[in-house]
Length: 312
Image (cartoon, rainbow, N blue to C red; front, side):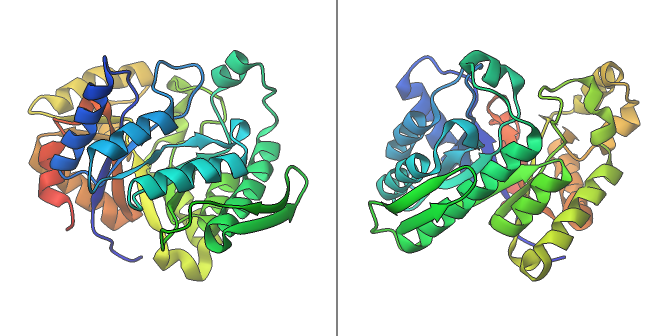
């Protein structure tokens, strides 16, 4: 398994009080050494609309990558999404790095009134969308006829950027991870969210052995391109403080876990900065994770870890 340099991103999921505060957050992430800033894409959560928020942050920053983690394919036609991303890529000087998913949060579908098809149908539709996006970004035009989409001589503007946006696809189930391994530049290895919500029922999905299996699926599906794939981990808990392990120990029983088991969960990082850095290095060695994502509330407290490891 190739050893990639560490990089870190932050997902800005909470509403700020003003556009200036949003811009300030993006600049702060850039100054602290984060590689990317992401916005989620939900219809049933209190958050900024991603494309508009990303445009504001693009104008406020110079180096940091920008994108959605992740855009939901079911309510974003691939041609429309490609046009929005191409424009953002142009305005930001080629800094777009975006995730695209099949849709998983039941409350989004309930809020919108859209039918939530079976997972297999949503993944099939995502596969077609990724085909269209890939051709559009590579060739600037696309004609496609599939089961879910029909695109006739579609053109993509603007075209001055010499490299396409980097694509992130993630998941916790085998079908999604195999699709990600075949299509994406970055594979996000997550828990399986087939239930449509986050809760204690995910306990069976979060252990190290479950992540070993997921990495195996990615390796098998990626085949000869595996060395070119970057592996990303979106954290569930990232606490950097002297009492972080005690905090996790107090939280663990609510999820049916012992304190020791909770600290072994790959999406949990807890401890003082040197301890968390050591944990991340060990997880790169075991799982190949070099790209870590934390959340807005952890931007500042996680910064000492970013300072220690980014680029190493």
